[in-house]
Length: 470
Image (cartoon, rainbow, N blue to C red):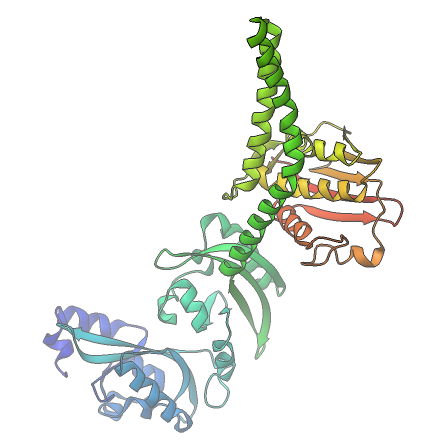
């Protein structure tokens, strides 16, 4: 073992040079946990010369209160279960040094021949008598925690290291925080860091994290700034939202299927009418052999209508990945009205579309917006069933488009308005409340806002504001 750096491990001289020049204190351990070598950074760390600690058990370098814990962690590493952790070493001058330790193993022909412990000194602000208790509290958190001071990483907990695919803090010291994210999200992260540098608190932002191994994770990032011993620190929290996004997608797809089922009756009527016309013309042509051009024109028109209705229905039913493109909002609204027009007629409700100004293109996922608008329109039809009226108004205001769905139904009491959009809260006899909740999320994903305005007896208005595509 003692010849490891000289000749026993491949390019020994090159490795020894690299080992001696490392700024990270690194101790080489034998199979009994004794220190047999350390680089010059070790002496800088604890003030002891090499001769004073060579041959001693590694855990004896820790303060007395921590030695048993370090011994157990060293044993875990030798058993193939290394666990990075925070503790405190004793300095020759009698002070304690908060440190972060990661272990590794040397292998030769599939057999472990020794171990190493890399010791990262933490800022004194994290010490508290005999170690970093503050950091240990964050180690049991289910979210990734990163702490920076003067632009340098000071601490990251276990969840944070798992998220970025690192085995220890030493792997992350050379990476700026924004480098862990997809390039399209870097401006968001830089904006968050500016807020923290100015002493503020950053609200959560959904971004895509890219690990050191190239893995991608949907996360939510937020942060705050705080002083420790009069020095400014930034605390950044990263929350894995993969499961939450998956649940939202499942809920949205479930709502789509529910919408398809609810629309089936109305669409059956909508398709039956052109089919009846087609059947009549075919029978007439078979009977007397007439081939009038106007017959073919009408039949083609009816077939096109059926095709359009079926296409719209399939778009709603089929789950898909969100695709944001510049779309004509006028056409989108027209398609939605076409789908629900027959249902409205059956319930004696008139739908009117009013363009109060020219409507430019908006950047959106057309299918998702259709789902949201169908929910708003269906709610209006159900609220005004029987001699009702729904007016859809579109207008431009500065850099946004306002779409307003107005009905003259029974209205909603003020104490219920605040709860609309909660799961399983609904004013209908049969309903789950999920439709409005999903619709609100769709509008928010489009960087838009949704407002409900209602008074009992005076109807309800749903106002959607969406940014105009540049």
